[in-house]
Length: 76
Image (cartoon, rainbow, N blue to C red; front, top):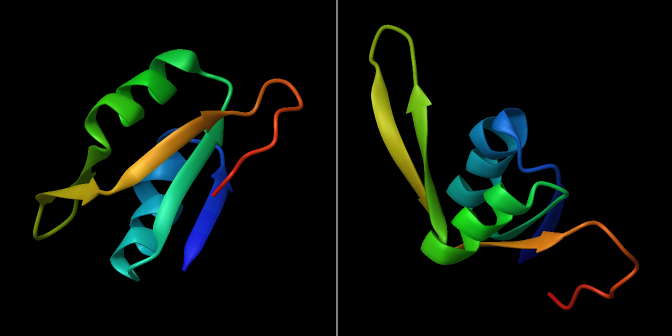
């Protein structure tokens, strides 16, 4: 299954993106921040710092990113 998530900020990547990736969904982020888009497309992954009693760093892999500026069609 594939998903397009609008918003690649901290909540989009750290919460929603991680949940979708953990469920095995191929994830594409849409955002206006070109720096974030370039980093996601260069690495196709990012780290999530899970805090609490058992702190850990998880890597979310297999992600892509597209710009949500403009009216281009996104091909998933």
